[in-house]
Length: 102
Image (cartoon, rainbow, N blue to C red; front, side):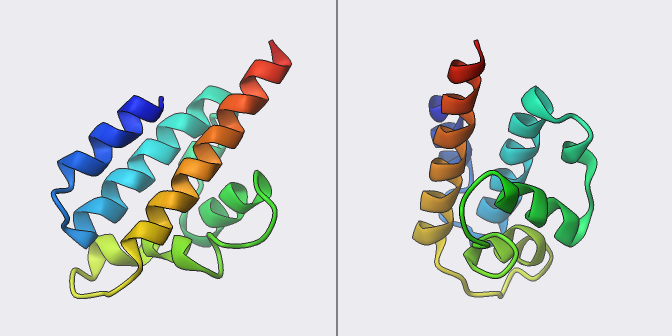
């Protein structure tokens, strides 16, 4: 899954709006593995679901908000490196959780 995440990042070609869109799509695919209903959550409820899997509220109140805002506001500025790091951390946590359940 981390390889797929890297491919998603590469597909965005440094475009902040495209990056936010592909990262959100990636996270929704990840959510389908554990909580299919969560993958369909809209807006802030989606961000709260993501936050529920990590300590803190970096999705709903931090850089993770870019997942909702940036795809529709191409001129929006956000810390892309921080968003990528947050998504990597979330993904690693989700994968570790899957391993512990197996």
